[in-house]
Image 1 (tube, rainbow, N blue to C red):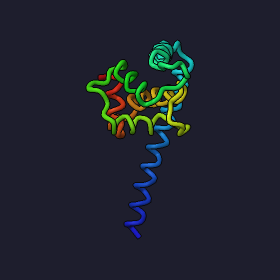
Image 2: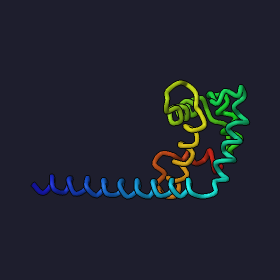
Image 3: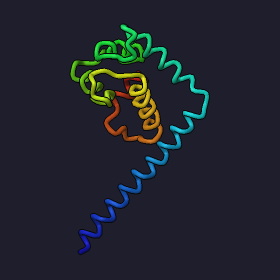
Image 4: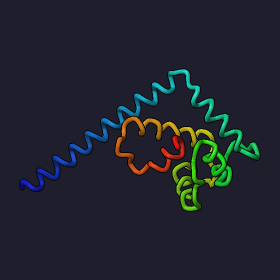
Length: 130
């Protein structure tokens, strides 16, 4: 049936596009790992500065201060803070370690260069580039 074939072709095209994005993402991450990564050093310094209790993790309040330092204006609302924690806290322990934060950060940097549509990450992008 022609409709089913058209739907299948559309799905295949979308899958191909996602595979291309994934390949670009992997390449960009590898480039970042290989290069002189002053950005990681700067982000780590900011993370450690706002890890007020030196626990190696930041909680929601510490993240609010970190986001402000990295350029968020106006300050994040409670709902935006909760959403940020959902995006950042991969271990679901209510706090964010540097590796979780860094992976979120570089993912957005890579998506900035590959996803002109934004993919729902405008607030995150604004957080870093306001």
